[in-house]
Image (cartoon, rainbow, N blue to C red):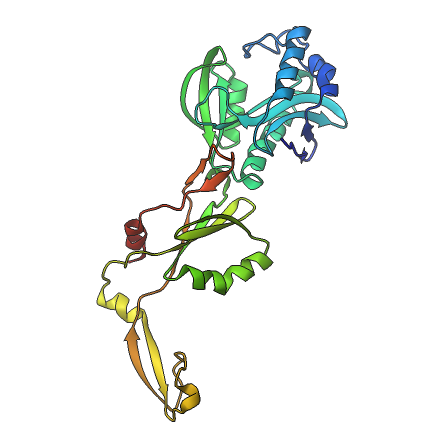
Length: 310
């Protein structure tokens, strides 16, 4: 599990290491630091055991546990990991800052780095947070970060509110769909360009392929059904011109359709639009147990797609 460095204006979040244990013990040494936690981390032995459990955690690359540093001093702890409380491998954030550094906006600054990393770097479809019902300050903090309260329950030994944030909450687009009549020709036409621009092939299935760049996906899928009939106005809007040169010769017997030009006999030919771009803000990503990667699910109703186009 690779835990990357995350930097903010005043803080550095770096991967937790065994050498950080005593610094974490000092962070939790205050009398009230564990009042919203299931364990009393003010007890040095329980705190050290907690650090050992965190160091032993495994998960997808890019997730894990961080120490929060300011000017080289450890002042807090944070995590972005598959939740131990929520089912379905949902990814949860957590954060704690030494109360001695409170009142400066550092908790918000440190916590904001986690969903930003989750969406921009990992492309996760959602990030969750569990906050003790009595922890008013932390509930206000996650609201400021764009999280939405979606319920509550018993978690970590006490009553907690359940919050979720989606990429669209932070203005992130998730994926673009491109429906084409011929997948092979589409790949031949612009696959090379995507590679030049830094896109990586992500998944391939019988009727489609997806590419990924950062947190965004391009999903290209071959249409297997004809779209519903369109109005006369729509058919006129999609009319193309097929032209026959005034002086055909042998070299042009297998010519391709050309644009309408002078000196040619041209007739309108009604054609369907061969492909359609659909940008959607909906989050269709789901975690897959086989590789712990999060991927867009391209299997959407073609009828619904066609209805959005006509």
